[in-house]
Amino acid sequence: MALRTCITVLAALGLATAQSSIVSLFIPDSDPQPLAASVVGQGNGAITYSINCPPGTDGSDCGMGPGMWYTSASKTIEFAISEPEEDLYVI
Image (cartoon, rainbow, N blue to C red; front, side, top):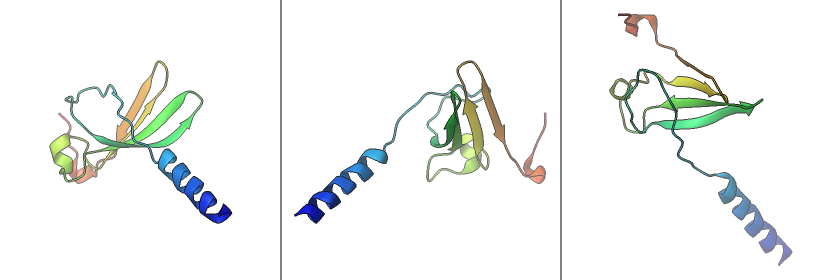
């Protein structure tokens, strides 16, 4: 009985920690659109996200290229897209 209770509690904890949320982020020079993101770091009042196109969407369709690193703090943001040189166009 104790083992069954322990497994149930562990399963409930696993479900509670696997949460998804919707947040709105200001990304300069981009169109409003749904994107997929994961929190990859958090601390000192800042959150760092890895942002990509939604699953099943080509990277060139949403403008995130191979992906974007985005850090948001209380009054600042920082973002970067690493694009291979042969695919980078500067206008």
